[in-house]
Length: 296
Image 1 (cartoon, rainbow, N blue to C red):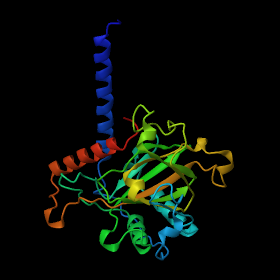
Image 2: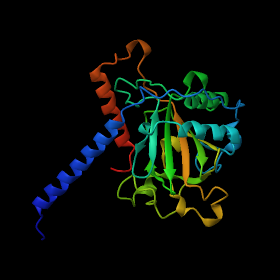
Image 3: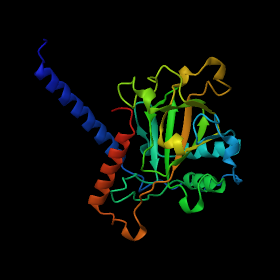
Image 4: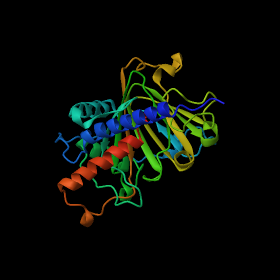
């Protein structure tokens, strides 16, 4: 029997803890969006109510996936990209496979004090209003949170589930380069070392459902697709050559994941902004970013 090298194991564990601490410090330095930049108002074209059943993906395969091509006009897409590009660099957090902005606040568990709602850019409000007008979200359960992801050089995102922090309906608006989002049921993940694998480390067998996300498209998923299935984005170099399309050579893809956080601070119970609450807000934001990072 080979003896264990406890000294080497302790050294490896110390290095791991040090890396985690460095990541936490990096995320905390990003702070939150409580002092978000002022930007010009943005108004998207009026959206008529959608009959999502007409856009159902793979009837009979997975319940609750809908794909709407060209949901945004070219002008709307241009305005959104322009507004996103005007954001200060400090609002971005760099992760291993992408960079992101967390807009609207830091989601908190149902047992915690809730998300303190923070300002979002004008394009975020425009997106909220457009999705309500389209009937994707009801007016009394309007979205209040956006996770803005920027992928470059064909980057992907690991398999994951969004979990109980949000209403079980998600809207994803895609801009720029195409991508494939895949849905997997839990038994098919047993051959992976961990549920959250790298953007390229997907199971070798076919997924339960695959959707190609084009520029200006809208993807909505809910029900079984949200609660029972894991989803992730394949790296773009893994797309079949015949599916590269006109935008296959673009260097980046933007996605706006729009959701409603269920547990938020009530208006009359919001915390006073003291030095300690600001520090706690930063710590919560750091923990949230760590939880969705592929770097772990």
